[in-house]
Image (cartoon, rainbow, N blue to C red; front, side, top):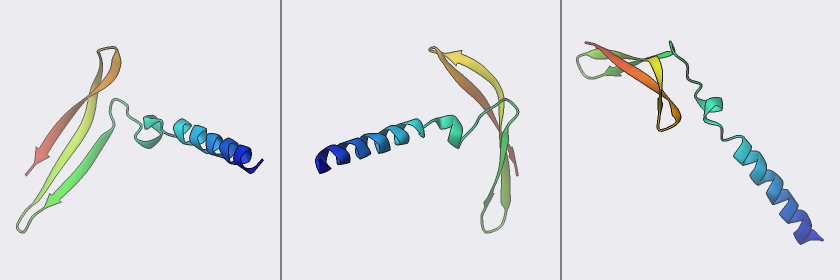
Length: 72
């Protein structure tokens, strides 16, 4: 009885974990989204922006085209 209950509980946990591993839940992507980052060194703070500018289908998968712009 306990082994059967444990197996069912493990299956429920595994199924819930697999369902939660959708990349869009953690990092939604769309054209126009951007991220601004700063890299600071001893003398200078460099800023760069990464922006999604377009999409393309590559090998049957939707892919996002990113552009990085560096500001020194």
